[in-house]
Amino acid sequence: MKVLIVSSLYAPYIGGGAEIIIQEHAAALRKIGVEVAVLSIGPQSGLVKDEVDGVAVWRAGIRNVYFHHGENRPPGWKRSVWHLRDIYNPFMKPYVRQAVQEFKPDIASCHNITGWSVAAWDALTECRVPIVQVLHDQYLLCPKSTMFRDHAPCPRQCFSCRLMRLPHAAKSNQVRAVVGVSQFVVNKLLDFGYFKKTPIKECIHNIRDFPFDPAAMPSRKDDGNVVFGFIGTLAPNKGIELLLDSFTRCAQPEWRLLVAGTGGSEYEAMLKGRYADERITFLGRCAQADFFTGVDITITPSLWEDTFPTVVFESMLFGVPVIGSRRGGIPEMIVPGKTGLLFTPGHSDSLLEAMHKLADKIDHFRSSRDAIIRHASPFRDQKGWTERWYRLYQRALSDNASLESRSLKLS
Image 1: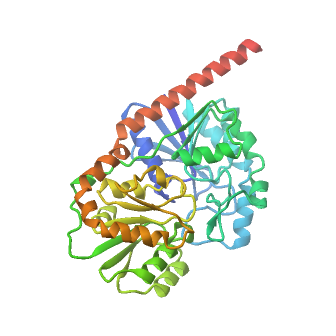
Image 2: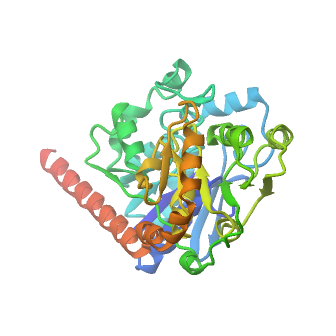
């Protein structure tokens, strides 16, 4: 089997957790004998062939007003022009055709298609390559991929999102299989009328294959303090302000908060100035092993409907319980009372109540470390994860062959 992975970005260009998962997926497929190539977007012009860890990678020069990866945020007018072109960008289709012509894939596995637009689907269909679309975020509903506005999830598509996603639902019917990284994101797209004619609709949760055993790492030593931790992008939709505000208002003397991650320079400076507190430490970028072995409780306070933040199960793989937002795919990972607690953003003091409850039972959760790790073990089962993906690709190919056979008979 030959699988062409189509992604907005690929290593070394990492925009978030999706790119890490995609790279692990490519490596895992190669281990079982699948021939894999990646088609991604790069900053150069034309189509340039590269190789990353033995995987052939084609990098296509973005045919839009700028390359959508980097620390510098373009001005608003430029971002608007970029998103307008990304509604349907036919100028990216020749890259897809060229990669298909050279690699001759049996199937295409499309992940984040920001920059490619749904024109990539049309190009693959024209080349008679069956498509599996993997849903990592809400790009197909919202150009910003988050459906988040004014500090809250959007209950429906706003006018501009409806307009900019007008052709997408109909075009999604050419996809042979749709796979969500959470059941939440699959259900949401189906509720909006996407993938009506797609025969295979599944959820395959992400996993992580650490180069070390998280369970073998030492847990934080009890020093009389309770250390909460946040790790991720410092951005409003991640709920970092809710966490910092809750902590500074009501933290107990023995509480500490470690904040790992970076964000926009102005936003990050604002957070550090507004929430200056000797009990709060901003770590910047931090290795996972260093972070999770230094906290008692991880908090994932997402305000947006976060599809499947891997930090939740990564924390549990280290034996660290999680307080998570009751939004998006987060509840699919946490067993309340056993591996952590859920709270409801928008409900007054819901996060604080969860923090107090877990801190009061911190000895119980520390002694339950092994049980937390066992519960999270499926999120480290690379073999089972890869087998599920391989079977799904086989089903999509089988369904496509049957469809083509029926079409030939009718003609």
